[in-house]
Image (cartoon, rainbow, N blue to C red):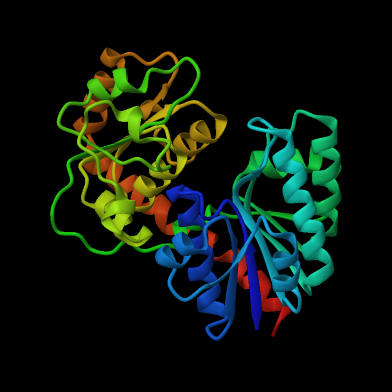
Length: 334
């Protein structure tokens, strides 16, 4: 069986690589003999993080079309691929790739997609078009499902969990203290926030973009360390707590039942804090000050055991839901 996957892979973003690793984990459970082809921006980086996968350069159209020929299952996602905040052209590019995949693959499955925002009428039109043509639609949250319905998608939509919840951490024995995962964003001074957490270690999720956002904090550069996604998860699992803007740093914390402080710059961060019952650990990243951040850290630390128990229960439920798209695919190919 031949399976192909397209997402934001090969760009040095650990969150998106965790999505791919989670998808691969769930697929391997259902299709142990399948060949997985990844459409990526950097084949060497992808094979280093995901040994054993095949790759094709996503920017070379002829190579991509040739690679997709004879595909049984095309997996689209997850992550936030279909949004026009960063660029409307991104939506059009992914839509074109989805249309090509529709012609080349027997089945097309959207896997835990995060949809929106979709502000431009053309973005909404093309997303509706490719959604209607897919064989299966799964999204990672209720708001994504609602947005697809709002733009006119009439197909069945199932809400699952982010694929990263399907992963298991590799055991690490050395405690890693507090991990901080910040990013640059209009109106936010990440260096100021990093200065409010002395003694912490920076976990830059998107390399090299996030390196300078952490001021003078010592850095755990997973890329230079040659760490796998599961090894980074293991480091999060032995952390005292995580302070993060990056969504997947917070997802890693939730998966490992590690207490966190979430600095929100996007509704998806708010949604995760609410889903995990950690609303009191949520701060607006633009409004946050060193004082309010230190207060939130202290508040989370005060009842860390209860938070760990709450997050553990949440992670167990999400782990099962993250595998659900694999079950849908299995039904097609029994």
